[in-house]
Image 1 (tube, one colour):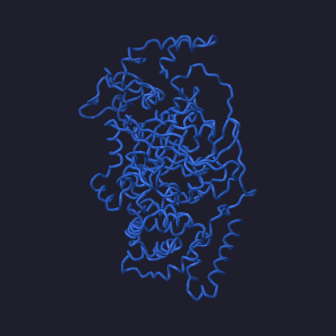
Image 2 (image 1 turned 180 degrees about the vertical axis):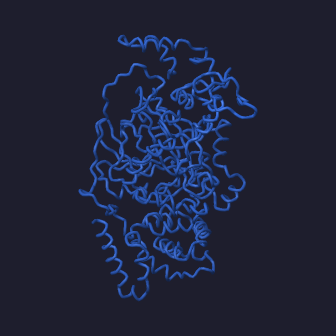
Image 3 (image 1 turned 135 degrees about the vertical axis):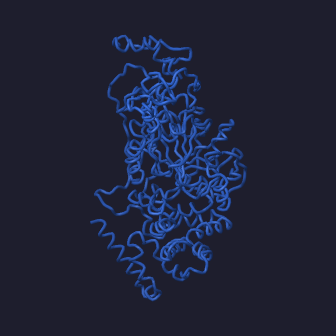
Length: 627
């Protein structure tokens, strides 16, 4: 690919009807040094990278251009390019600094504004650059997205990993990890935002602030709050699927290199003819794998992947046990960040195989298939490998390249579209972009890591700089439109707050998590799950313990019994009480434990009072909601 300066310095690139102003800009581009820099005396400023545009920097960072960064500048300059008269002493009178010392104010203001605001979620993390390469033609026939066409095609990418622990917690602590991929495609940047879990805790965006508050530190003490965490899980039955994964060994992965990733949501792929396919993404780590036989049940929850020999490949060491994680938190709190950076800086690569699951043609898309709290069984919807993500080198500047990286689920290229009916995805598309603009401040795309430098356009909408280093200076401002398709889904004809999800309020809510617990997990893994939960649950008030154990019992009695046995003698909760409350645990989201709690005695149960009252309360709640 041509660099920005070489493209703009070619006289023939100007059209015959170009204005004299544009011609003058192109002629001035000939004044370059041997390295192609238009300002040879200014190789660095107080802003560090202000002498280069974001597209040029992005092309270099992703390896599209081969030029490397070198600090061989003769002068340190102000952001306006003026050489600084002095860089180590302040202009003063008898020890009193002068506010008219613009050298001092420029240097200090650049420093104080050098870091963006902290992310609300997944604040602490790491990132790296690399490429995505298509390895099969499985995707080419399903979507018109150009970066997926043709075997062997490479697209530059940036990947960021983050943890819910934020900056206050060690990398190896228990928590959800985020993994986001930015594809720099010819059609613009495509952001694929996912987790290390194949499902999420909620499906209604109204609960999103409550979830993140429940997983965050106590606002009064700034200490972890297991009470709020377990209270949320106990009152939101659909969260128990992801909660079980969180408290298993999956919640303590061995760094970022051995962590699998999942898109969680359903996406719509559209081909050139307008045909629609429904897909879900999975990227599986290929770092230091060994071949081992695996069951189909394990596959349905993302536990393994297929090798070229037809067997299943499983990581040799992909997750820490809790004692191992505690030890690593003490020995190296920054283990995940250090492991990735050290591996890449010593010439190693980190690789993930990108797969999709697709629905058969003419499958009617239902809310059950859209549910982000449930997986698509791989026995019904097998994985299809479409390519691989390879990370090759570290960022140059952590704050510029990682902290300012902004991911937006709404950033989709032609051929990939959102799916109507997924309220959580729709809400994320509505708020992520605004949140990133507020956090980074100013034009997000001015940060090189966010620049759509390979897009076939001159400037993004609302932007004031060329997006591509190969973009011509004379812009054709003709209208450009993108035609999208419409899918058929069961949508309400009137506004309502009634839940559209078929499993909500029914015992089928626990079907998949029960399969995960009984068929995917081994006996040893279940015992570790009990212990991981009991360590935190023992410090929670009895009322919350009772409610959470009822949810576990609704999944399987041994789930609650295993945790209860590890809580110790101080607990006053009996398993009979837990079993009784578990019978109506699936309805708690509709009418609450306070409504159901007083009617949990055996006498009420035997007389049918519990069943009848619960049904009446839920119907009453439903009536009030829809009104």
